Length: 171
Image 1 (cartoon, one colour):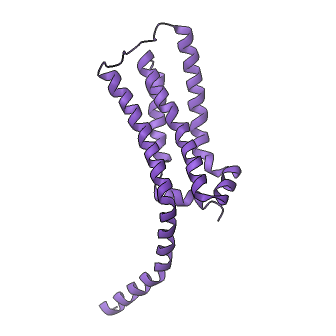
Image 2 (spheres, one colour; image 1 turned 45 degrees about the horizontal axis):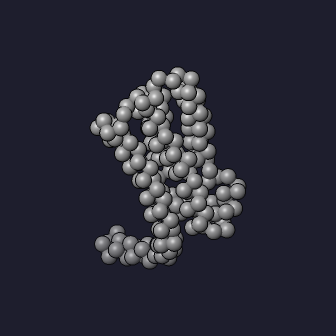
Image 3 (tube, one colour; image 1 turned 135 degrees about the vertical axis):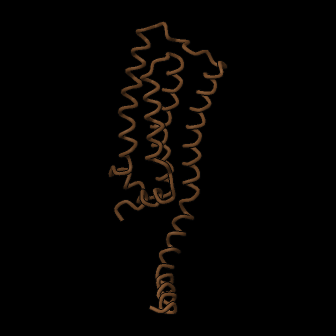
């Protein structure tokens, strides 16, 4: 193939995909504010957990403050284990539920913000709570659950591609 034919083929390819690029840009523009809000929430949860770690590690907050009462410590541990174990799979599977899909079809941006915020809260609130409880009781179970919650944020990171895919369910 001559260089002219190659450049001509590339131009044809670019022209045929320009319609798709315009549609993607339109979708990106409508979902961009929702993505920014969800990304801000994710960063807020992570920064709050890091602030708790810094506060306890710098001795600004007292480490092991409630390590004495074994019965309460056990009950809180069981509660956080159940919440963490239940919330993480539910948060990861949330956008495939039929009620969520119906809401997303009705109003894409509001549904994405509502259920995306709920999803982030289902992972972020136990993350922060487990981080605080780890330092207050010095029980490694809380630390492991906080680490698992932090790792789960990688599966719900609100990239623009994920936002588009999650709002186009069933289309």
